[in-house]
Image (cartoon, rainbow, N blue to C red):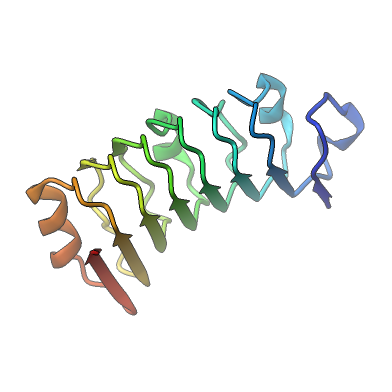
Length: 161
C-alpha cells in the first residue's frame, strides 16, 4: 500500500504502508512517527527542496530515492545499519557533501548531478553490486574516484560528466 498525501499521523496505517512518496517542496524533515511504519520498503522524495534530515526508518527499508532535494546535505548515520537497503538513488541533491558508511546489502547506487558531493565513507564490500553511477559529481575527491574505479560491479561503475 502506498501513502502519498500531506503527512499526518495515521495510526491505522503503521502496519500496512510499504511505500512513502513525499513531494512537498516546503517539508524540512519527516515527522518522527514515520519510523513506526514497520513494513516500509520504499521511501521517495521528489522536489523536497527544503528537506534537511530524515529520521530513523524501519529496518525493512529497501529503496531510497531522493530527487531535487536541494537542501539535503548528509545522510543520517542510521543508514549504515539498514540491513535490507538495496538501492540508493540521489539525483540533483546539490548540497549533499558526503555519503556515510553504507550497508553491505546495497547493490545499486546512483548519485547524479550532486554537485557538492566530495566524500564517500563507504567501502562497497558487497560482491553483488550491480552498478555505481556518479555522473556530474564534479567535486568527488581522489579517494572517492579511486574507490569507484576499483570496485568490481556486475554491470557498471561510472564516475564522470
